[in-house]
Structure formats: C-alpha cells, structure tokens
Image 1 (cartoon, helix red, strand yellow):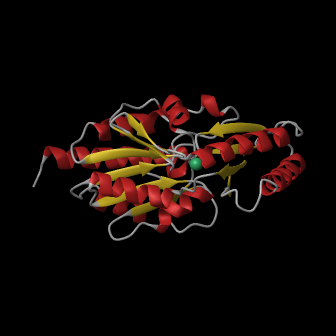
Image 2 (image 1 turned 90 degrees about the horizontal axis):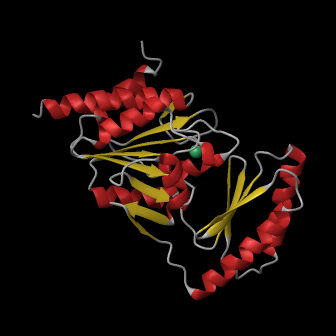
Image 3 (image 1 turned 180 degrees about the horizontal axis):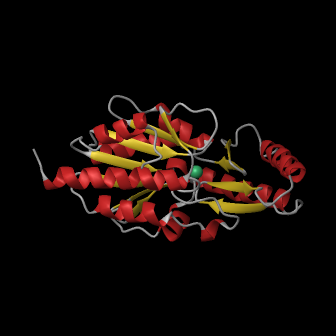
Length: 265
Ligand SMILES: [Mg+2]
C-alpha cells in the first residue's frame, strides 16, 4: 500500500491526465538524500527509474530546478540531454543540452571576483566551512561546521560582503546549511515561469524541500501541484516525508501517465 496521503494521490491522478505536463523537481533533499559530500549525491534509484520512464513519454517534460550550477547539477543528476536543467536557482538553463546564462556584464564579473575572494577569505577562518564558486555567485557551505562556527561564519560573510559596498548589487539567500551570495538575482519562481512558458505546459508538478523552493510553490496555480518534502512552513498544498516518498510519488505518476499514453482519448 502506498504511504502517500490520499489527497496527494488524488492530485497526482488529476495531474497525470493533463495534456502537456511539466514535472519540475528540486535535486538535493528531494530526489537525492542529503549527504556530507555534495559531489556524491545521487537520485533515489526508484526516482531515477520513474524520471527515465516519464522522459520516454510524449507531452511530458522533466526539469531539475536546483541551486547548484548547471555543470555541477549535470554531473550528479546523470540524466539525458532531453531533461531540462535549471541551475543557480534560475540564473542558468539547459534546454536540449544547450546551456544559457547568466551572461554577466563587465561590472558584474568584476564584482563576482571580489565576492569569491571575500567569501573564501571568511571560509578559511572556520573549521568545516567550504565555499562553492557559481557562475553568478558564491556559496558558503556550513554543513560540516559546528553550529557556533556556522553562525559565526555566516555573520562574518555577511559583514565581508556588506563591505563590498551598498552599490555592489549583491543579494543573499539562505538555504539548508548554505548562505549564498549572487551578483545576478534569480529565484525558482521566475525559473518555473520560464520553463512553463518554454514547454507550453498545461500544468506543473513541483517538488522541493528547502526554503528556496518556496518561490516555486508561490507561482503555482490552477491545476498545478506543489509538494513540500520534509518539515517546515510551506506554501505547497501537499507534503511528503522524504526522498523515498518522492520516489514513490514519481513512480505513481509515471505509471498513470504511461497508462494515459497507451489509451489516448
Ligand atoms: Mg533541496
């Protein structure tokens, strides 16, 4: 028997029946259980199988929508070129294998170099802190730091970035064990609008676990379905416990969608 809530099963049954379906999925903590080494994160095998089954169907598009850079996301997700990838929360896109964005201007590029240096200087002072260079920003990872060090590193990084000046154009965002700064603002809500338009989707299923996914849930409407993974406040109408349940949800959707494709009305 399925462990999915009945209301969610009903919502999946409804969305499986739409004409053009877009399945948009966060990666870390949603498809892939969280691990200490981000490079070794992999989708739950059942989720992977369901995604590949959905990829094979007509009028069904899969998109991964992540805070990782596109290159980083592609290396851990290991999905075909037909899968749409959205990286850096929407600063980068990959459609049909072709990557676009973020196309920074000269001032943004200069500011990005200063941002890398500022965040990396701070991270070097705290045990366990790690930085990630992204095409339009810098991430400060604190999963391996003590809570006290993580708090201090974040405060220190905020101060260092503030010192780059009020006109730096840099914005920050908080995620699970990460504080990110970017010279080019992007969010998953805007990203979902772009891929919804690009795929001419009749409805969107969006699944995510982090605070940054709330921007995505906020733009859902009509026949769309939003699913929050794990605890925490959310704008999504449905919730599941973990990536195992996400895999179950995707398997259910793939089965229903395959049946629909086999008997078109
Ligand atoms: Mg996540």
